[in-house]
Image 1 (tube, each protein chain N blue to C red):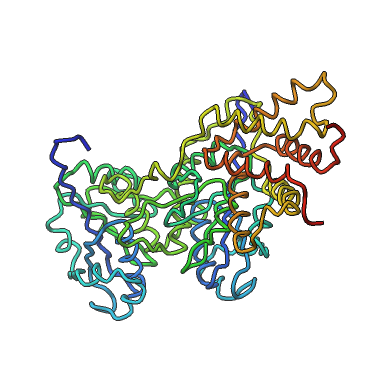
Image 2: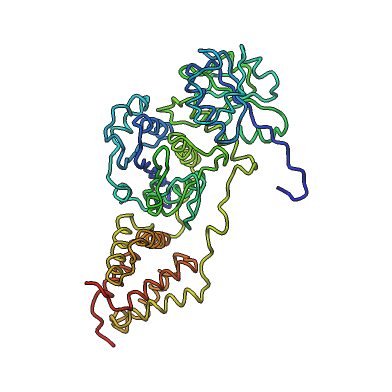
Length: 251
Length: 251
C-alpha cells in the first residue's frame, strides 16, 4: 500500500446486465454508466444477442461503453475475475446475505481499492433469479417507495454509478488498514471450491432426492460465498477436500 | 424519530419540467418521482400540450403523478407558491447563485420543513434558459463526468428524487429485518463444527506430520471462524460432514 503521495488505485466496478431484453435499455445503461465515469459493461445472455443495433442510438454518444462491452453465457463466467459481487434486487429473497444501499455498496467498493468489484442487474421485468443472487456476496437494494417499487433498469444503474462516482470525487477512498487482509478470492476460484464440494458430496447421496437438489446446491453456494475466503483459504479448503478423497490410512 | 415527539411535517418538493419535448420523457420522470415518493409534478409550456397520450405508457403505472400534473404558461406561475426554487443545470451559467449537489439540495429541502420547495428541470436538449435560472434561489448541478455530461431528463429527476428520499425518514427506506440476517452461531456450536472437521480429517493424515499439526489446526479454526455462520448454516455444514462419514453408496 502506498504510504507517500501515491494516489490510491481505484478500480471502478464492472456493470453486469443479466439477460437484458431490450437493446435500448443496454444503450441507456451505457449512457448512465459513462455519465458517472464507468466504462466496463458485461452482458449475460442478452435476449437479442450482441452486438445489438438498437443499443447505439439509446446510448446517446456513450459508444465507448458499448464497443467494449463483452457478452458471456453465464453470470459465473461474467464475474469470474471479480472478488466482490453485488446483486441488485428490489426485494430481499430470504437469503442471509448482507443488504447494502447503493451508497453503502459504493463505500465498500472504494474500500476494496484495487480489487475488482461487479454490480449485477437482472432483466427488465423479472429481476435476478435466486440462482444469480446466490453468486453474490452481498445484495444492493435501492431504498425505493415500497408502493411503487418497479425501478427502470437504467435508473437502477444510474443510481449505483452516481453513488460510486460521488465516493470517487470526494476521495472517500479508504484503503484496508491491515496489509495482511487479503481480498476474497476471485469468483472463479470460489466456483472451483463449490464444484469440488459438490463432487465430493454427490456419491454420498447428499443431493438426494433430486427434487431437493437445486435448493441444497443453492444453500451450499450461499454458505461458501458468505466467508469471503481469500485464495489461500480457498486453497486450504480444497486441500482438505482432496485429503477426504483419499483412502483413510489410519483407523 | 424521537418517541413521543410529533413527527415533523415534511413537504416533498414539487418537480417542475420546463418546456419538455417528449410525452415519453414526462412519463418517465413521473415514474422516477413515484419510485422515491414524490407525486407533485408541474409542467411549463409542454411542447405537445397537456395531457399528452404518450406520457401514460412511459409512466409504467405512475398514473397518479400524471393525473395530478398541472400545466402552466410560465415558470414564474408554476413556482409562485414555492419559497425555495432550485434550478438544475449541467454547467454553471456564470450567475452568482449558490451551487448545490443533489444531496446538499435534499438536505436544504428537508431543513425547510413545511416550506414548499421546487426543483426545476429544463428541456431535453438545451436545458434551462438563463431567464429560468434567474428565478431560482440556488442551482443544483449533478456532479457528472465532465467528458460525458449530457444527462437524460428522467435520470436527472431520479437522482434528485432519490437524494430527497434518502433524507426523508418516511419509512420509504426499508431496513433489513433482523430475522433475515441471523447472528453467528454461539462459540460452542462453532467449536462443535471445528471438532467435527478435525475428527473427519484425522484418519486421512491431514494433520501429519505432528510438527505442523498445531498450525494446521489453527488455520482450520481461523477459516471456519471467518464466515460467522449462523446456527442453521453450522447445522448444514455438520450435515455435510456427517454425509461424508457414511459409506458412499454410489460409484
